Length: 390
Image (cartoon, rainbow, N blue to C red; front, side, top):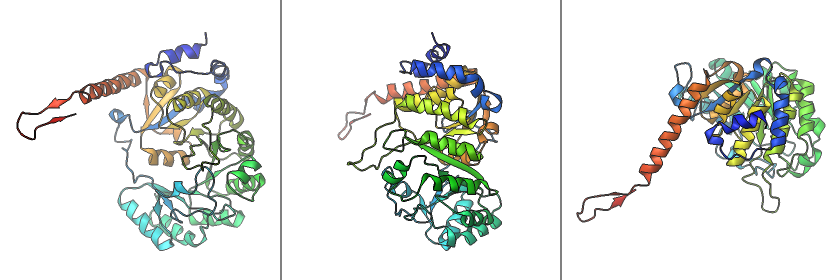
């Protein structure tokens, strides 16, 4: 019997979870490498551990690290997994003046930073040029305000302009398949263009945090391993993995849900290929049991950090001997911590197994009470108009 399967069986929230036995065995055998040094620690970003909140750990707030788009909801590419819909909920700042006003407002509301992005042109470039003087003004006026930018593809002058403007973190998706670039992104660029952008960004003074979208080719893994090799050659500050969530895919080109075990095997490869580069699992991944499976494999593979873990995953990490830290944070703060690179190593409140189990019991008890009382129909007095309420 696999020892780690026995550990999973001790986690009440994971009862009946259909794990791939062969994969779990492989992950366990690779664990000594995955758990060396700082990789033994894992930081979870979650809004559910409020009882552990301290003065050093801020609470959840929608404006803590908002996303701002310089094109509003417009994008020329209309990639099959997104169709530009991901931009629509973001704060629009279509002019440099609008960006200054937006940032002044969110700083007044307590924001510590922002993700700055926008829709691409037909060459997968976000046209930040007119905004760089305003970004520099923001950094000079609010020195503690952090700016992470989704760069898309850039050349050396563009990367220098970002550095001169004071941008803290450069993020980009690394795509390792030409078919994915052509078919999903509708883009006439090459895999070499993505590697060249990563190389150019790493050569600057910015932190660079590339992302790999697992299952980007209509739910199938195609160029992810090549993307890993590209990233490993240039050693960025950290790497964020997400799993495709194609809510807006066209009906004639549907995406399948990536197989959780295949995603888990990729996690194991990523940990081995990237070595000591911090590796984080971002917010985006499918929901339901597949999310629990993905999160379980991520813990076993030695991830440094994870946003919004499934039920039982924090407890599992502690039972597997990982040093657990928890940062009570909503998704905006988690994104901010992820892109600042290495936050999983030195932020959050460290918790032991007893504290985690006690919290889980308290949470489940509260849920059961809510379910019980929520199902009781309360009948009012017998006067006219009196009725029941649930």
